[in-house]
Figure 1 (cartoon, rainbow, N blue to C red):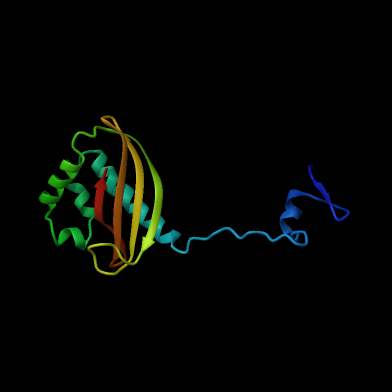
Figure 2: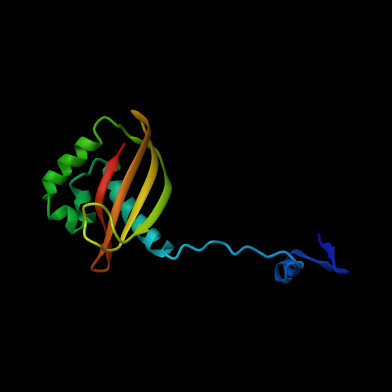
Length: 150
């Protein structure tokens, strides 16, 4: 068993975690994101939406949209816009979450609860892309209110 000698006693990894820090040293508390639960819930919805896009099921992705999109576009118009946005990208090769952020205001939308997600994505015909999604919380659900690809 590995241990170290501190103040005349052997400390194992388990007891070291319970021991107070040496005098003059403070342990840093890990930063806790108070909105991590909301961000994770929004990301689950985002991945469902993106799954439809990745399979070319643009009209079906409309089920994940919220009132901000539905007030402006019907299902067919929305599908046409998504098809245009993803035109020429080809099949998805990889996607990784870059960051997630909680906000109560976003440009062009009323105050509320929002999560903005950024993904690094690689497609067959577009190696480096960033997908940005905004999701809004309403009536107990996170719903897509914006999708952009650069």
